[in-house]
Amino acid sequence: MNIGIDIDDTLTDLFRTKIKTAKKFIKENNYNYKVVDKTQIYLSGIFNWGAEVSKKFWQEEGSKMLSNISPRKYVREIIQKLKNDNHSIVIITARTTDMHKDPYAISEAWLKKNGILFDKLLVGKEEKAQACLDENIDVFIDDLPKHVLDVNNNGRTTAILMQTIANKNLKLDCLRVKNWKQIYKIIKNMEEEK
Image (cartoon, rainbow, N blue to C red; front, top):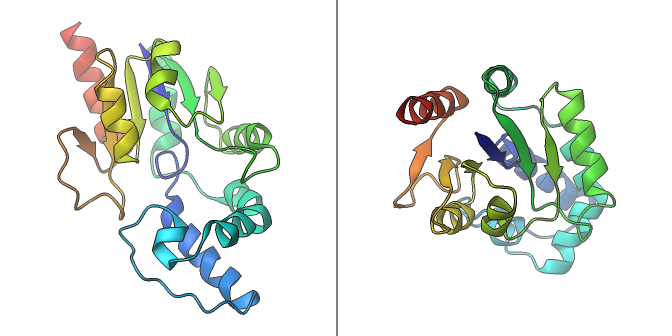
């Protein structure tokens, strides 16, 4: 199968690192922002700051933060198993040049540094349902409910929601997992059904 996978908060647990780095950024810049809503996905909602501050944060802190974040537990091992089972791994991220100088280079370097195997890397893919259709993706894994629901609605791809702090209390009609071992089990079950 062709398996599409998001990076941020899917391969990584970016949320906690992002909050910690944003608090440091606020302090260093003498901003008067505090956490207002941890259920939000984007920093602008979490801290109630505008697009300009968010862009500054990502430009100043984003590349360093994304380069040094750790993968989620079992990511490397499960993707290795998926590759051993002859699946194709397509990394599909919405990272763009608006927030990162070179999102492809940052993403590729992180994947290689952490030993995460992949066949193809797509960046700047904000319409992930279309990317899944274009790449003939059978299974797609992401943390953002919008992407998961859009992909499920494309009628071809099974989407799996990686549970995070921001999405865990949302009532959604989709497959939901808490870890990579659960993802592997779902994919193995799908193989058996084929």
